[in-house]
Image 1 (cartoon, rainbow, N blue to C red):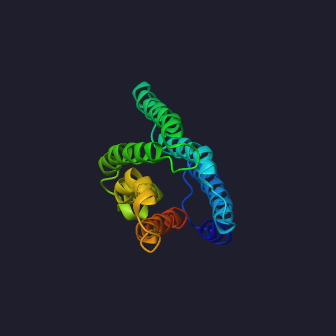
Image 2 (tube, helix red, strand yellow):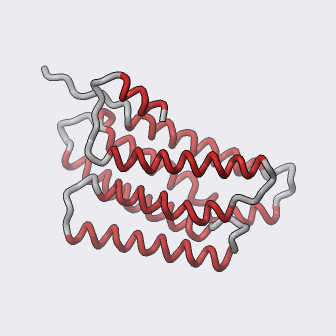
Amino acid sequence: MLAFAWSRFRSGYQKPPWMRTFLWIQAFDLVQGAIAIAMAYLGRNNQWLRHLTGPVVFAGMLWTLFLLAPDSRGRRGVYGACLAAGLVAALAGAQLDGMRWRNSIFTSTMSVVYLGLVTWELRTLMQTSEDVELTSLPTFWMLAALLVYSTGSLIFNASSNYFLRTLPASLLLIPWAVVGIIHALQEIMFAKVFLCPKPTSS
């Protein structure tokens, strides 16, 4: 949000059409994350909130990714299938894990979907932007952030409830600290999305 505010204060940064959708998703994620943290500090279980808000963020990110390229029947089919897989996983996880535990089925499915889609979109970006430095594009930074998240947190998402049930309290923070570093890297890359200068004419 600070990166977005800076890009509004200082002109000269790229603003692709999909950025508004991306901004709203990040704002929603910030609010729900703040509420979840406040609940945790108050000693209240916040996983039911994650069960509800996680699919919303997932759907919003899929819509953002969908907007990166022109609409087509094949593209709609791929993204529709990914959205359906995520929603089915969210319902299945709520049934199997319960609302008091992390929805590991959904978060694992989300990571796999991001990994597949981001790889596809990065390949397309490299083919269509051969004459442009990739690191100068907001699209690259958003895709890179999701790639870092999906690869770095997949094993954690799949095994987080195992950690919660088996690790002693003295060791419980270790996997959360590791995935927290991954989230920090993701957020730094997300900030860069708003801070790509417009190309200067020669």
